[in-house]
Length: 339
Image (cartoon, rainbow, N blue to C red; front, top):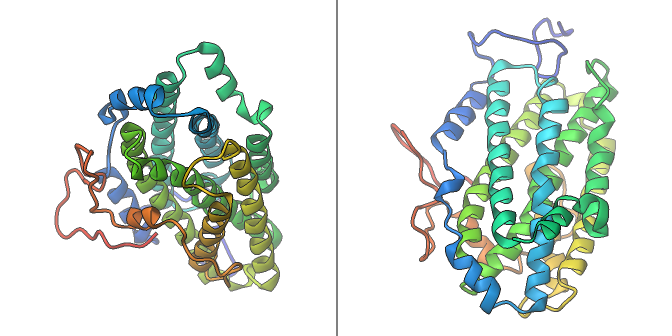
């Protein structure tokens, strides 16, 4: 028990009591996640194969090969961090309920990307290379190394008891939410939605709509954990912590920019490295603002097609199902949350 004579969110232990509920916001996030259920079988890749065969040149094919190689392992890194690092230290049963649901969603994303790879890369050797991307593709290995650098620092901790350990855990959560889900994946989504704006790869874009929405909710949960921990223990976050977060985001932007240099190395019409860098800096600024810190770059969004993704009611002309659909919804539902 803490010095405050009550259980705090990051106090060590394994709290089991759901009533009285200490953090109802996490329980509501869990309930909303259950309502937003989709399956990989709903995604139709039939038109994508024709696009890949007849509408893509070498540069676009290289872009897609790099994207699917990143997707092949990205969510697995996230899932491992959920199980090994986050679940054991966020000490509220309602928050663990959400993390359990998030783990299911990450597994669903892995299934989606597995199906994507099986569809896009019929050659078993090419698929094997994609799944080994963290070892044989330098731009993807660099991103994986960045993830492990920041997240593995709490891997050996069975209990987080000191202020420094709690700060390290919060840094893990910032890396997890702001850098991996909020920057690396958002950078990947930009390529997908750019191709969609050209009327290409409708199946990939349709499935990505679901993943995009899930990842936005995952970020919202992580940022709420950080906000709650700061509220309970203000001493955990000071100017030094803010400087570490800013440094982390700068490193993440550099990693993702290196991936863009690789991905766009063939010259993809309509996508410039300069605009991609600006978009990544814009995303980094958004994450810093969501965390309550000063923006680093002052960048604006150069991609109008990405602004549309914040409107959950949007249905693309080629979609058969609205990606903001919720099953079993009762009462009022808000679709205006900004992530």
